[in-house]
Amino acid sequence: MAELSSRPIGVFDSGVGGLSVLRALMAELPHEQFVYVADSGHAPYGERDDDYLIQRSHAVTDYLLRQHHIKALVVACNTATAAAIHILRDAHRELPIIGIEPALKPAVAHSKTKVIGVMATRSTLQSEKFKRLLASLADQARFVLQPCSGLVPAIEQFDAIKIGAACAEYTSAIGTFGLQPEQMDTLVLGCTHYPFAEDALRKGTGDEVVYLEGGAPVARQTRRLLHAVNALHNATEAERSPSIFYSTGDTNALQSAAQRWLGLHTTVAALSV
Ligand code: DGL
Image (cartoon, rainbow, N blue to C red; front, side, top):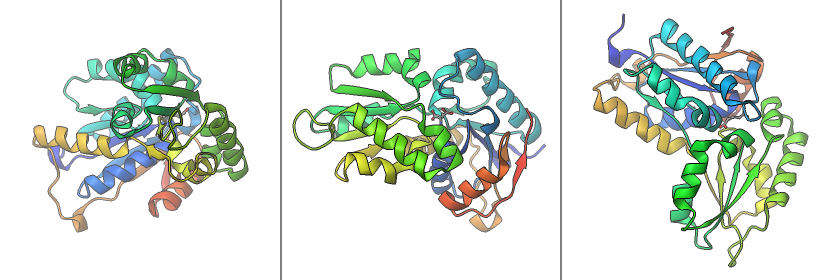
C-alpha cells in the first residue's frame, strides 16, 4: 500500500455542492490528490432522517477506505456532518475526519447589525448539533433561520429558472436585508450547494450583504490535521495525481459542474454503493 502521505483525501457530499469545498481544498492543498464522491443518486439529503444519512455516510466512507485507502475524509456536506460525523469518527478512530457546519461564529464576528440570516437544509436546522451551536451564540446575535428545500434539487439539475424561483422565494421569506439596524447584513450559506446559487441569491439580498460559507476553514483544518500526523504530500504540483470523481447518480451532471465551477476537465465514473 502507498505511503500515508501519498494517499488521496476522500471528499463526499450528497451531490455537486461539495465542489464548493473541493475548490477551497484544492487551493489550500495544491499537492494533494482528492477522490470526490457525489451521492447524487440519493440526493437531496436535506429532507432525510438521521438513520438514512448515517447509512449513506457509512457506505461512501467504507468505499473510499476500501478502494482508495484515503488518508483523511472531508464530509463536504453540512447535513451529513450534523447527522453522522460523530458516528463516522467512532467507527474510524485512526482516520482524520473533517466536517462542515454553518459559519455562525464567523457571522457573529462579522455582523454589525447582529441580525444574521442562516439558510440551510431542514435536516441541518433541526439537528441537535446545529441547535447546540445556535444556543451557544444566542446571546450574541439574532439568527433568522430559513430551510431551503427546493434549492438543492434545482442546483443539482442546474436549472436556472428553478434556481431563480427558489432563491426569490427564500430570500423574501427570510426577512429584510441591508445595513440598517434590525436588517440582516450577513447571510450564512449553511449548505455546500448554495454558493453555486450566489448570483440568484444576490437578486434578493442586494450586493452589500456579506455571504459566509465554510469551504476555506474546512480546507485549513484539513491541512492542520494532516500536518499533525505528518501526512501532507510534498510533491510539486506538476507531480500531483489528478483527482478522481464518482457519482452514484448522473455522471454528466457532475462532469459539467466540475468544468463549470472548478474549470476541471475530468471524467466521472458511475458508482454503486
Ligand atoms: N450539500 C449538502 C449540505 O451541505 C446537502 C444538500 C442536500 O442534499 O440536501 O447540507
